Length: 287
Image (spheres, rainbow, N blue to C red):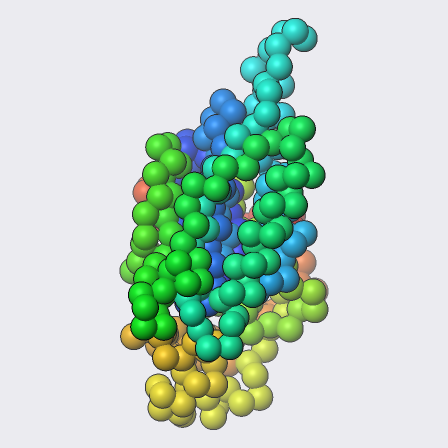
């Protein structure tokens, strides 16, 4: 299994893992793409705002580039043609929240996918297979029905998902700290690719917010109100996750993890089905 956290994107083939999944989405949206030129490829991103156009475009382009490599490696004759690449699209997330955050993200994603489908119509066909967003993902009482999306890389089947904390992969607090970092232009962080059977966390600067001590001392009710876009519908373990991340940021320096000049990514290689071991890498990848 490959777990993709908020603000991340991951690509994986059926030879690397059976399932790619993300959860804990309220106003956030989870988008999954699957294509099958010669080897099934799945991409999944956890989007927390209407501000990732370049990242979503690269996500789609990744499938075209991957298919081109696969076609070349198959050593097809010059008379053969791979035709249009069919990419299945699944989007889950949001609900009828009072300030319209979900609807803004929904409109952004669907409009963007429509533009991409038109612009890339000579080479790709986007097929919207699942669309449970905003009002279509609301239980009628202002609460999301689906908060997580999983996709089977082999079959392409999708399902609503909730992932136990211990199954979310390595460095959960470090990956969550990225949400708190002020890194300028927001972009999805690439954590997994077909060519590297590992989770890689590229360097970024973080430090605890000046109000970390105050936040840690608050009741769950107040902490929810100050840190969530949808405090009324967060899951029971939301505050535990916030506190764990704040304690991590307060106890570790950025240089302790990524080196003095923030030049060393942190990479975990897969061991077995869902265990990961820290290993050193020589260069970082970006999305």
